[in-house]
Image 1 (cartoon, helix red, strand yellow):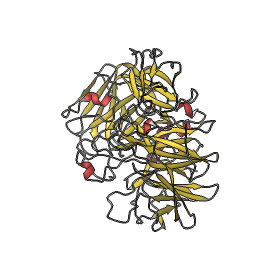
Image 2 (spheres, rainbow, N blue to C red; image 1 turned 60 degrees about the vertical axis):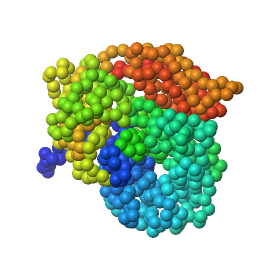
Image 3 (tube, rainbow, N blue to C red; image 1 turned 90 degrees about the vertical axis):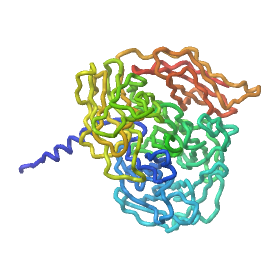
Image 4 (cartoon, one colour; image 1 turned 180 degrees about the vertical axis):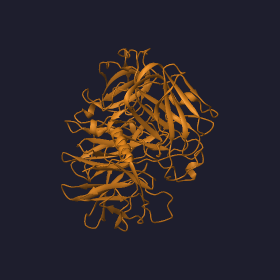
Length: 586
């Protein structure tokens, strides 16, 4: 029998083989984020925005929902996300679609519910959410809930609802009957913030701008070994220190106690900052991950993105999330098997072009070209136009090994509001050893998708000193980049071990602000930056803080009464130093 194999089939096979070879992703995750639907939020420029993510593993497929997206995504590998357009609201009085949505799997059905304080929002259900195939399970949830989260306890066949977003009221909880999906009205307070004890719960970018009380929100419950882990976000979504903490109880509606190791999801430094208001889920291999909100907050406080971090429970049932080098290339679930999630899933590919020389085809006003390599997602370079032919060039300083490139577009003079479909970015990236002779390294000239944080892992590592990105097509606005990030290994030496590291803190027997700890160390001349690890026991240094270009850090996230342990390492484009000894701060 003769077999026919068309050219198109061969082309698709080649694409699939190429996808299969990609083993990593990079935060912020690369999905087609919608633009803010609110005019009042666009007065300083239209921009992409989402937050408050939920990922649920349903029938071996990951489903991602987040704020104001007029639909949702699904993926089987946590790398390639397919968007399904769907509006869940039935009432035109709302501008947004789903705000901080609740999503949960119960038996053979996936359920969705959006934020409201009124009895005006249905609970939707689907047994086939890979398509726009939804039905109303309950016309209105009578209790009403803002920032809702449902937890289905499979062991007990019981359903619980948690909600709240306030700087006055605690998170609340109630049981919802499985048969009719309604609460009988018995509501219990679950937890409230204690910023007088927990430094990281204080309001403000550095937990010291306390003109407002902090906000508690983003409830999410994970059950593990018979215990309920109540996760919550604080102190506010527009700050680098936006984090998730956790309380633990043996009862789903009462008796929650603050976990000693908090916040469990925290990322105040680096390019993609903030790790609050999220959800914890398991991949198809049984490993845990935590998806959360990353802040930008330039054109509006609610300009945000999403990040996914390795997470889990250690041998002592302590819940953790590893954000160290969390915005560098990280292994996807398929290639994370057998690895220690407490140590992270970072590939070891370093950032090659931090603060290195750059050049550009043009520059719009004060949006200078060096802003694309300063590791600050809030700053960006913009060309004068969005025309084909505008370009950006980065010099790695030496011929280096390149494994991956992440292109983070910024929104400059964007024209859209709400969800847009059928838009695309197209570009080419060229490489050179001398800045004169160029060859194509990455060709996205025929790309048909919207890739605002495009991440390309090379099939084979390349050698080059210079990279040049040529714009071919923008979905809207100017050609602008908040981060043109090149990952791999340089040809030089990694930094030496950090010396003279000292954490300074008020004596517990004297008056002082013990929620803050000042750390100093000897400047390492070969370091681009430093990673500080911290925890409350020397064997659980799960917290991390990335610091670029400085030899000090003022940590304002400490719990007042507890001792802390710290360790530090230096890094550059060539690698990571040996860690320092562990220092205790009483």
